[in-house]
Length: 66
Image 1 (cartoon, rainbow, N blue to C red):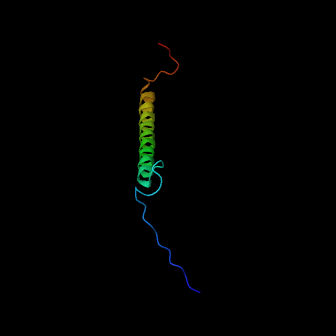
Image 2: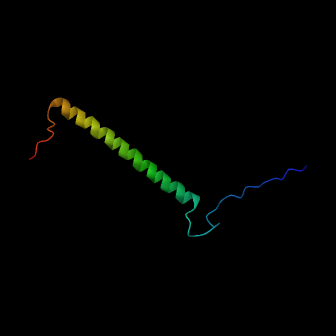
Image 3: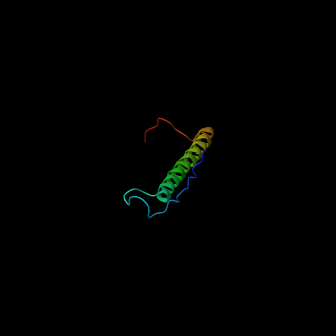
């Protein structure tokens, strides 16, 4: 029995439909999403740390309306 050799064709921007985003654009979009999520996680962490410090100092007034 003879095994068939498969050849991979590299993906280039000119292949396929022009309406579908290419792999590079998909990677860039996913990278942007990941960076945005990371930034949100960092900001949330820093906000919680700041809240804890204010709470310990007694300067945090929950429920007061001014």
